[in-house]
Image (cartoon, rainbow, N blue to C red; front, side, top):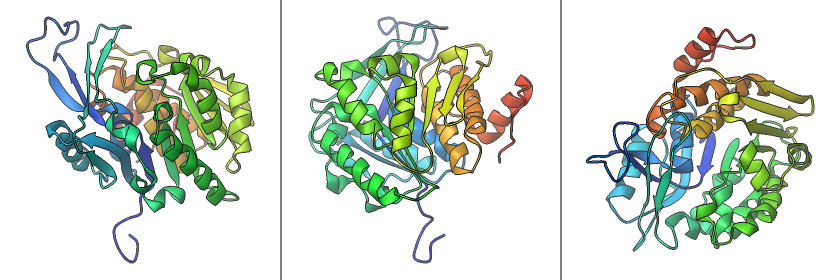
Length: 332
């Protein structure tokens, strides 16, 4: 607790927040569905839920429409213990709805329904709490760079945070590449803008496909992240079912995938980001934090939805114990 109020926020997650709807049974097409399950979704909704379930004091910075789905986002995230004070409401806009299908093990098509402009693309400096500059962790979605005014808002915040964090060793600015080409009016702008954001971040996370889309060689991304100052830069490569790799000043370390029965692969990457970040915040060595992230992603893949699939620390511990990993560290 602080002397004047509630506990300080440990992690701000900045990105899309909306709802996901899917048929309750895998291998059901949208055309053939007669019912849908709804949960909070989007980059920020998923990662914030994952962090909160791992005991991290988390807030979301985003925006929703003035509709029932937006109300649901606030209520559901609040029930998970996430601070929702910085989720703005955009009058006349509609909250993002993502319909998806699950055709395991590899096909998970998504259909986005979004206002134009979408609520989170209108973020202005006034929408960002002052605490973002000093917070131990900020996790940013690369998709925020797709449109103005959010693009300039985010890049300015990254610069101010980098200046404020100079010389500090216990803070992390995490850029998740979050490549969603359908959400970019001009996808050709993605590589240059991601490169600009990477230079102000000290952790860069993405899949092999996302790094390729950004035109980033992971080793080059590491040099960008290291140039952002202390702590030393980190790059996380997500290989899907084949595991994950960590690039750091110590070189490249790769963790194999954990064999599970896949129900839906959507959300697995967000689960990895959440658990990896939680590990860094709790002082774990980065490779151990990534091991927990790798397990969290595997667990999410065994469940139908995304945010509601995020695991607890005990579930991660249990999977790592069953997998017989050599570096596993139990976390409560």
